[in-house]
Image (tube, rainbow, N blue to C red; front, side, top):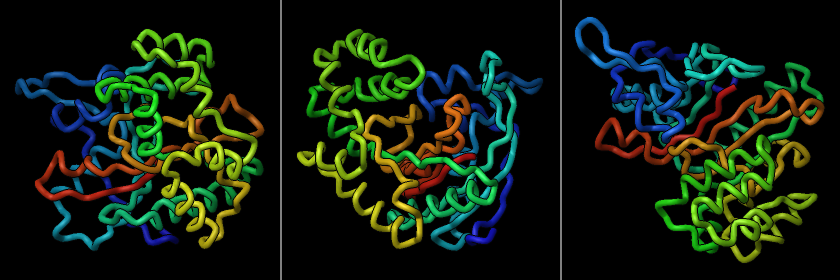
Length: 279
């Protein structure tokens, strides 16, 4: 609220077609969907971004643009319950929609910084990457366009399953130079060195974001450019974020999200770009 975000709520029960088909194969597999007594196919929200995109598509004519909202609600996933993995849990989302400006990404980084600072997380880091950049790198390594999302989903598991298994999985996708690909996207010891390593690619999106973050008072030490950061959901198109604790890696992702250019277009004829993260 301090940063001008308005609260909304969206329905718990949704037509199945609203939720399914937006997250990729893994997301669809984990989405609770069923038939009710009226023979309607329904689904429970897998996250709050897709229901928000549908809400915005239905109401954008009555909303200020860009529109900024926060939303705290339950979501459901058909997980096998383990540490940090529950079938029912709360998410707190913030989104800015109706602008392509990277100032939105920088402001979201500022909100993230404020939240974790005030919650007294003393040693956290905002990892960032660009899906556009990652797609560019995949093209250079001759990854076919129809295999790029599969490759991104595999790369997204780097921290969980390790480099060797990721290379093995990429080779199963018929990506011949998987080892060289993983080497190319490994971050260096500093963002400056990582940008230098990728100087043959267009890194302007990352560089502009870092400039805006600096202007908005987000410390350079808090932002870490990691070209191996993937985020497995299909709808991301630009900058992506993942916040981690440097004191306790077992906590996993504390907050994550990114830019989505095409999501609202699934629910209306207009096209609106949005950016958001979920705590």
